[in-house]
Image 1 (cartoon, rainbow, N blue to C red):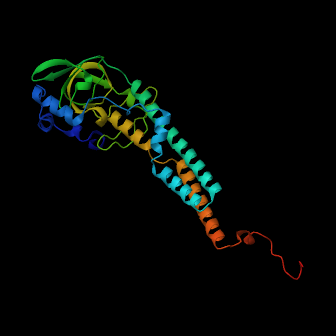
Image 2 (image 1 turned 30 degrees about the vertical axis):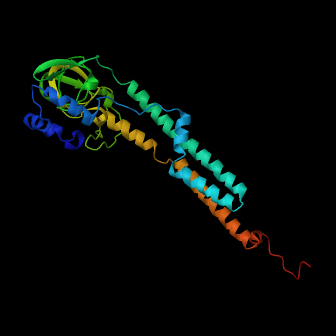
Image 3 (image 1 turned 90 degrees about the horizontal axis):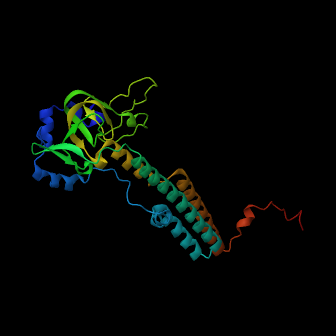
Amino acid sequence: MASRTGGWADCSPDDLFDLFKSGPQGLPDDHISDLRKVYGLNKLDAGKDESFFELFLNHLTSLAAVILVLFSAVVMGWQEYNTGFVLLGICVIENFVATNQQYRVKKGSKEFIANLPKGAATCTTIRGGKPREVDPTELVRGDVVDLKPGDIVPADCRVFECKDLKVTETIYQNMVPTGCGDAEVPKSLEVEEDEEPKPIAPNVCCMCSTVARGTGKGMAIRTGKDTILGQLVVQELQRAKTMSFWSKALLYLGTFIFMVGLWTAIARSQDYDLMQHFRPYRHPDVYK
């Protein structure tokens, strides 16, 4: 259980309060701004909006693009212009392939975030012993969140007080198992048609799950990009930046063409007939 929930499920409420310097009465008001500076806003973000052209230009500084442009410049310096232009063409194609991958992943991540369940404009949290209605994006780690039927859980929370509480985590069902550091997605979330969705942990409710019934109080243990959903988005964006199979194949092709161009340039500088290796043998006594 600890591997799936970062160990929060196994903490006693007292240990949890000590760890986050909080308690049933919530965080002191003077701690909120400092915690927000450390952890940022409690929202998922797929990065700034960039057009396909902007991503294309940014990718020109990638390792693959730099290597292919360098190969092209070198062979053109040897006056192998045809080979140089072929390498430049491969560079453009590889850049397009990589940019398309990154653009599609960013677009998909933004759509995923946009389609997540939206809660009320405010959520009830306890700070300084008093209930407060705050914007969910303003939550910080250690905030005590009041959970009521119909609420969308605003962050990953460790429940420490409840009465007939039931939280459904349907959004997490059938997700591809992905390691998320201390927030690893469970590997057995497949749900049969008539089966009840299984919670990630009995006393942990995750961001964007729904309170089906009952009431309770939970402490925000992860917010924003550190939540399970946030880590999934971050990992997907990081994966988009890695070289795909086709990008690697194009780089290998460019390397092969470069080596052929190098061989050709060296042979020409030595006045060596490369084609002699590909012509059939002609015996001088037969062909006079």
